[in-house]
Length: 247
Image 1 (tube, one colour):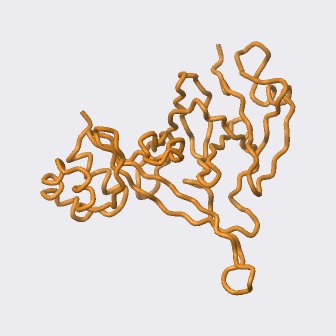
Image 2: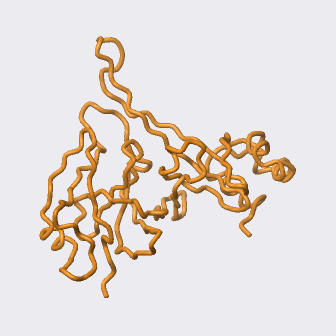
Image 3: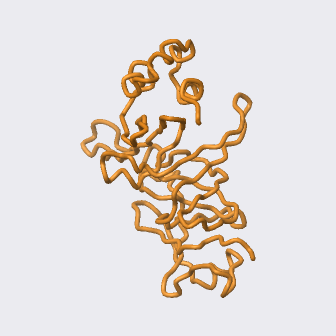
């Protein structure tokens, strides 16, 4: 049997500056090769919505995405439902996952992610970096309950787990004639070390901060020459793989 593309109904939630149009269910089934009875979970009283990505919002500077590129992705569902190949973007600002089916690259859809546990993005190789897999999963250890439905990028997983949380906020432009008149999407990242007891401790990417959060790694970090120079995500992925290997 052909894999399910959409085991769940895809819905577009209202979001500022997003252009959308409803698509009748029979057209959506044709769009995805679906036929009645093949297991696609469509609600015939609803519409799938076609979403225009927000990468070029008029009067808004910045990107709402963790990564603005469409990257090949694999979804891991809590019910183990299989999916056909697709590309994804994680819209951090609006808290949604946009997907693009390979057969219709000009259209994007919002995934109903209620049963999504994690997604894996395939980042292509460049002239200076090899291809790699980027894993995003729910931030279930977050102290703030409102953050537990968000997705964080897993930079390292061993006895400890280092994750990166993307934060996007919308700042209104100046209406007084002083300052930038454009609305602006501001971006920053937060890093957390998740301990074996599942507590998430905010850290900075330096030896002192990570040693404080993981005292049993302190001596190994102190003795690791690479740790003393590590500043970037990739540096700390390599350092922690050496001092805290996956068992």
